[in-house]
Length: 282
Image 1 (cartoon, rainbow, N blue to C red):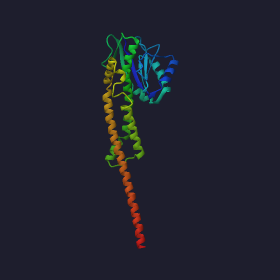
Image 2: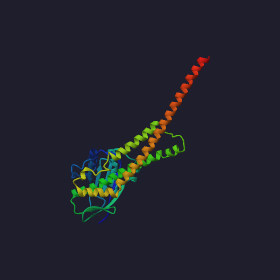
Image 3: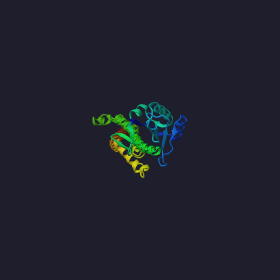
Image 4: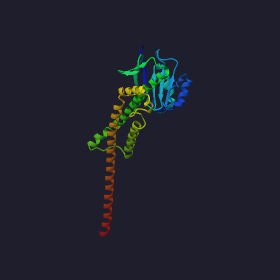
């Protein structure tokens, strides 16, 4: 059996799934509606032709802004990505999207589906609906990984933008950041931290898997393989370090402001004393 490819991209903060479904349907793609109701915020599309025989080409679109392609031709993938652009909220840079993708090979085989040595083995005896569910579990984990990769890149970019500050403070140099810029940096950090910890399923298994143990195992194993928990932990440590640094910058600016105020008060008092002395002696 030929190896087939499964590839995931995070392209935006969010998708308009309703309009995307209509748009893709008008281009000849077929919506797969067999997913259970509690598999919310997801659109699954099928197509007539696939990259290799033996498994239908399928695409999973997660509302959180990620798409996972199973056995889809490169030409088709490119077309779908173009259609997708019109339905994105806060799209990411195209170069970043392609750089931070996640790809796994998969094969149809006998026996239970599993992730083995970085390769997905799908049970060839499953009916179409069950196969879609298992692909959903794998796709869910891949979606998290590519979203996390985008946020990791955002954080690295942020760290790069402030990395000269500790050295400047250490050397006793002036920090060339205004109070507003420091507050903006802190806002960026809080937003990123919020998105990771509160707006995602990175730290907990989604409710969908609670009564579907076999799917939960596929999801968990894939998350483990993609080091989701460890990466979130590392990212939170980096975020904490950045928070401490921005706090330091803010305190530094407060001290400068306070010192400036003190000098202004001293100067005003000096002027007042001089006026008083002038009145006494002249």
